[in-house]
Image 1 (tube, rainbow over the protein chains, first blue to last red):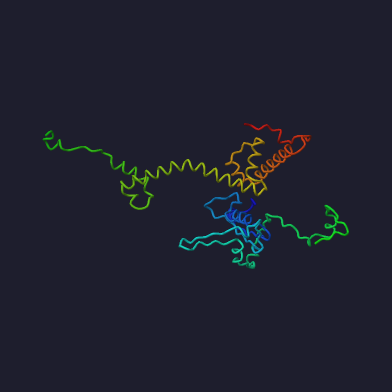
Image 2: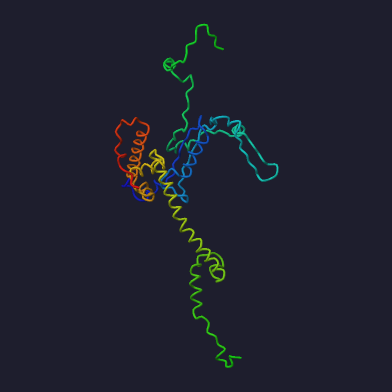
Amino acid sequence: MSSFSRSAQQWATFARSWFLIDARMQPPGKIASMCSVRLQGKHKPIYHPLSDIGDHVVVMNTRHIAFSGNKWEQKVYSSHTGYPGSFKQLTAAQMHKKDPTAVLPEDILKNLTEELPQPREIPRKLSEYTQEERDTFPMLWTPPEDYKMK
Amino acid sequence: MVFLTLSCWIRNRGPDRYWKVQELLKNARHFRGRKNRCYSLAVRAVRRAFIYASKARKAKRRNMRQLWISRIAAASREHHMKYPALVHNLLKSSVQLNRRVLCDLSITEPRSFLALAKLARARQQEGFRAALGDGNEPPGVFSRITQLS
């Protein structure tokens, strides 16, 4: 890196990268905080509030975003334009229905530098476990032969 | 009447008003509007400017420290460590580098900063082993350094 010219090194240091994050089954708050850190440029040791060193972040699969708990029904997004009678309150579920999903354009795909790790581990479905894993899983109790399962 | 002859009516005012006015206006030359030309407006504007400058000299130290901390945090997160952990473990290993130096190292000497991050990580693991382990294992290498102050 020391063999590069000064201008080339400067160009490379202050270049803007493109990050990709897959939001499938992830909590939106954690995704948002990761995105905001990279958009501001706070992940770089050359950060300064006046300098324009943020990077681009592309979030895909936002349709499959996963709130924890009962937030789909309980979380409320409120807004007011200032005019009387324009206080709007939408639950997260209604807000999500309005959100359109898009396909990643090709020129973004060409530019992607790095894919970020997902903050939450997605648990596997029963169909994704192999038969050996299902057999070796410990059972708490074995039901007797005439036990009727609903 | 005391001043009966013409020569006694002449008063000598201060001889250097011009230079005193110029000395104040030179601090206002880069202002916008009539504040950079007219003395009465300039006096008020220059006094405010000096007050802001005095307050800012104190705030500069605070802002610089905040900037150093955010830069060190960014650099340590690149090495999978958080800022409070890094600083606390460097303190426990009696590495007395201040935030200004750490920030400069993180920008211009990345490998030295990586070495410091690894040192802090090792001291952190030793601390965990001492707290959570049995006590039968020998204490680590870095824990034997006594913390200065």
